[in-house]
Length: 420
Image (cartoon, rainbow, N blue to C red; front, top):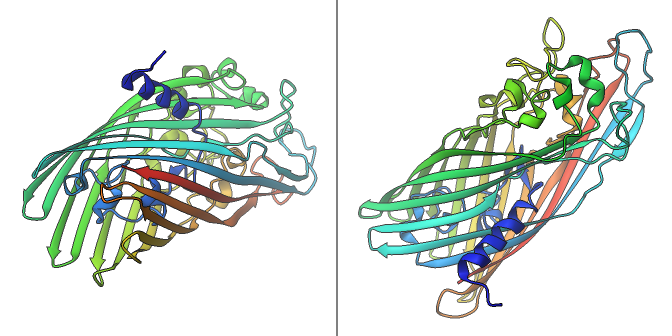
């Protein structure tokens, strides 16, 4: 039976939602959105060619009517190392010494965007993309859960982004996006924390739960003088429902909201063939209590699931990006980028972050496009490498100095896309 265009879109959305454990990341946010943007290490707030999939909503009025699709193969390598034997002192929570690597090392990640150039001053765009995520699958009972032989979490977030872009004067535009976010989450191997939870029956091993949320994004893009572009965008917090099946794990009875973020970028045509870009991006992880609440306070561990319940202890994340886009010939465009940020996981928070060891903060990116015809059809490629990084800190539930925990990660991602 022949499938309608709408039916094909539903199939694509389904594939997207089952394939979302992660991608090259700024914390758990994606390093970039769309193949072109990833080839620039996520830079391009001031470069309209990166706007179509999850980018600056102001930029699409400068793009032609087109489709962009992409598929990425993502390879995160996560592990933790515990040194020092458990003290066995009553009231402590020691971990088994050794190094454990996470399974589930390969993921497929699609994205999709469509831009309609309505007239010279207006464009309408929709895109579907994932926002990174958290995934670990350790083949051991890390936290001594007798009900599970493995330990890990799986958080995925998918966005539907509908944007309107309007040219206000000359080469200056504004844009606004409405955002819908679908999240799903599961956790296993955490039942040993039941005595520390406000709702121990809604803590671990409950299968996959899901929520919906909504927010918005606004942006500006303009050419301030010949060849020099400035872009800025702000994305609100995504207000979401709670993961009710994990009300005893996340703070605020299972609430997990996507934090607000902003970015500012410039793009300068250094020559007729070379564009240089620089961006700064801030992700306000402290917007989300589930992400930013510390595991331990001065009075001990606040019960999991309460408003001030233990979390991952992440700080806000500031990342800087530098990139180059070079038109090598009539058919080839080459790209390169570098991204570096602060470490959002303090050394005091390594224990819970065994579940989400997002410690990579230096990324190298390469990309290219091959023009296939004069109608705007092109093949796009990107490659991202997140340099290996680690954070080491104490086991906060052991005798001081008894055990150290090191969490470690590197990432590889290759994406191929098509513009037409």
